[in-house]
Image 1 (spheres, rainbow, N blue to C red):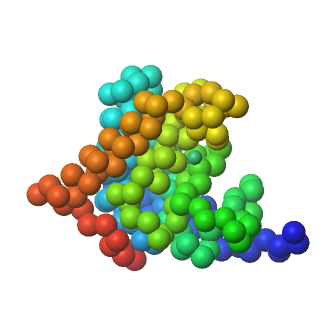
Image 2 (cartoon, rainbow, N blue to C red):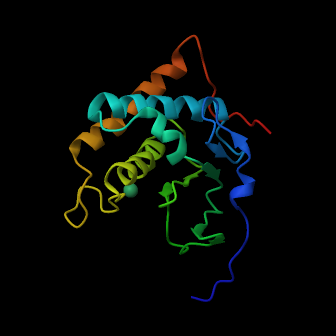
Length: 174
Ligand SMILES: [Zn+2]
């Protein structure tokens, strides 16, 4: 399918640093850096609590960029080039082997999409394979405990939103 690559997003667009994550950056779209930074903290500590197989500090270099993208403008990254996926794709999120994550803007951060993509990135860090077929048999790594982790992270994040130290979703920080 002859699509001219469309340069919409590139790593230099991801110039908003996530709170408490020196090496994690995002575009300044839908999700605020405080909320996403907190989400990362929750994910890492839940992961360590359940699997105890990765130093939380190790995530700083692994999870480098998360970008929130408009649902009508989700682009695959191939090297430095972003190209448009098939029109029929309705993607909630994507994780790339370099640790980059894309999220569709139509969701909320309290949905499970970010935790799902973070599991891919964490499995890559731990096993060297992001396990693209999840619970399927072709790739190994993803099991029911990861499904549970996704639920736990989403729940913990939703609770944190209700706490006195509140972070608002959907804040435009530009
Ligand atoms: Zn997946």
